[in-house]
Image (cartoon, rainbow, N blue to C red; front, side, top):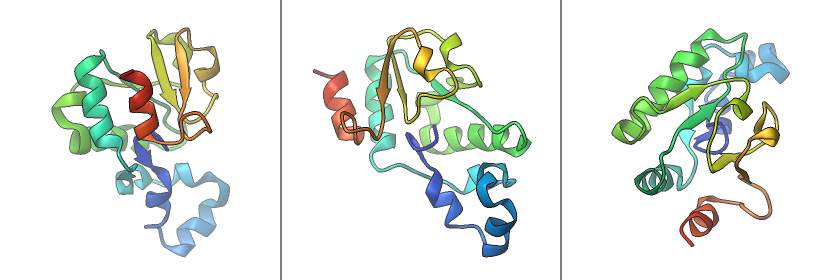
Length: 139
């Protein structure tokens, strides 16, 4: 989700300076931060298009030390993706335990590098944005 569907930076920008200073390099542990985030450019339309062609699930990792992240991510999916993502959210620290043809992720951590299908590395030179990802998936 983060930095693929969700613009993580948009949540940080809404925090006051004291919170940013307190959590420093652990900003994903700020209670409620995931409820502040906006969608990535093109993400909502892309998800809708992809979910019409593919059996689509959302794999995301939630910070272990931020229990609100788990519910905030669910609420975000309900708010922005609605019926297209109903019961399609999987929170996991081991993405490689899930099966599929493609995994669109911004990092190779949390098992993404061991995923049995093809990893589409979002934000990379080959897949810099949703337009390019859609072109690839609908070729």
